[in-house]
Length: 69
Image (cartoon, rainbow, N blue to C red):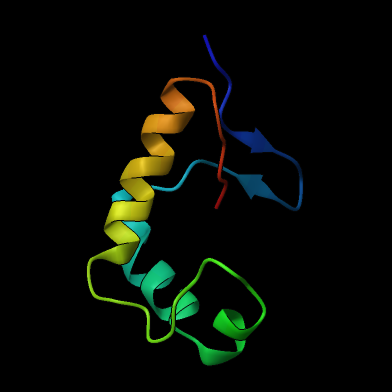
């Protein structure tokens, strides 16, 4: 079984869930964030967070990429 949660006294890392989409939308939509990345568009389009979470979830299931919240 693939371990996807990492827990310490001060930190929990876990895979993104679709319920995180609103927060991802807000954070990724910040102009300062977009300015420091090549792959985050500004303005961040509606629905992009859900699509990104779905793609990263599928990639994690295949063992390719892991994006943690």
